[in-house]
Length: 180
Image 1 (cartoon, rainbow, N blue to C red):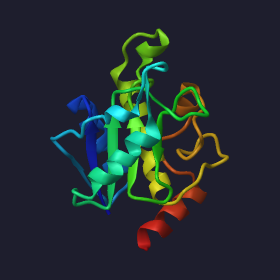
Image 2 (cartoon, one colour):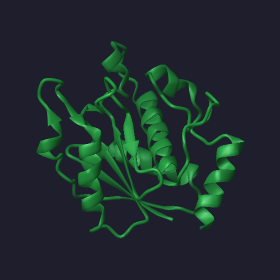
Image 3 (cartoon, rainbow, N blue to C red):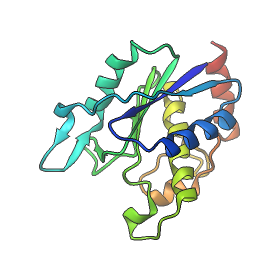
Image 4 (cartoon, one colour):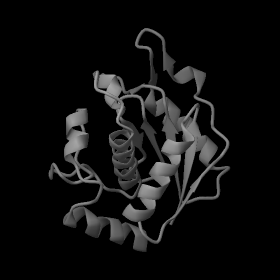
């Protein structure tokens, strides 16, 4: 499988490389490439009263953009705060199953929660969200195991509790999906 990491708007290159390196470990035998050129954040996705972007609208733009990319999966990474109408925010969204996934770095930084800057923790969180959303593209749903990467993160504490890997049950599902 070939995965391309695509900045959506501004995205820190060091963070993108950290995600790339982590995905190489989490998804062995997968080619992971970071694209240099960013896709712009679609203007129609911005909701001014909320000061957030509607993630489904960004994901739809990513779907269109992905047709220009030579890859099996496209992971969009953005700095903007994302939401879906039924929730205050989302860390990401993906087609399940599908070709595209999107994560937001906005709420993954410890300083968002009034904590000191911790680049290692921030990069771990970004990797976990990337693996989680790519898992959805492979057809995986949310897992009831709170340490599995496919567990639904309703808060940053949920993300921190998870491991950056699939539980045994989800691991089997990933391998089945990759064999297709």
